[in-house]
Length: 392
Image (cartoon, rainbow, N blue to C red; front, side, top):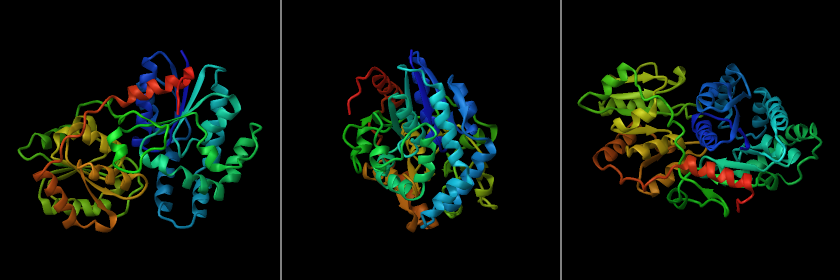
């Protein structure tokens, strides 16, 4: 039995796959502790892992709101100000201290995500424990050099200060440092990798990890009523975060008005929902997608990897309004594979969305290749790092 210390930040599509892998590691007899946002306390504990909050609920919501404001800035110094405003330097120091304190010599592996693995890399240097990076989408590996440059330009002093607390010298080569984990594991299948720029050599691909497999399957009565109607509804969602173009929901709901079909609008933050919704469109702050997606006619969404994977698993047609982060790349790979349709932000109009939705309803895409259990394969890969048998 070994100790797995996991650190993950973000929203459902980032955090829940880590929880799913952690659950598989627990089933294999390992101790698992997950450091993440306070918002995910219940999800981590339900999986059976120990939970350590890296923030409070209020801090998490403030971070999401602040990131949404600065996401389209062209001034890299705005990222430094965002880092300082949201207390991320304090969070980094806390994570490093917790990982080092909880480390068991000769019996620990540290797990993080490629673009935000700073605390696990620091802890790995201090303790000598192996470090694994789980990438939820290809974008996270493609962008390592660019993000390394950004950190060197505007956050080097903040990260080096956290390193100095533990006796480490400043980082000299930021790209090399961010590529210094012992193993890189991609949580997507081979066919998705081949549909765009491939993962770097030595990356192990596991298949998609469905982070919501442990969610309850009971839907609220209003949603059940919509799903049992003669005309199956559409599902529209922009995920659980705020990193969206302001016109995402406006455009999507305007398209729903033209389609005149019932729809479920799943949006966690009420202020993102248009004040007036089309007839037949119903807003829900949360619904269990595991129980929902297979029962809707199609999904119109932001292109997040978790929603992509869930719709593929359910063989439900999907239209992606993809902008920002990994979403355009996810959308391009899906469209290139003939498994979905995508609109770049410059083409977002209600009429264009209507056309794409009608196309997938009339000609559903071919079913995806058979999917393995990505969480199981990822857990097995982490074990090979523990035993020293992982090869890049």
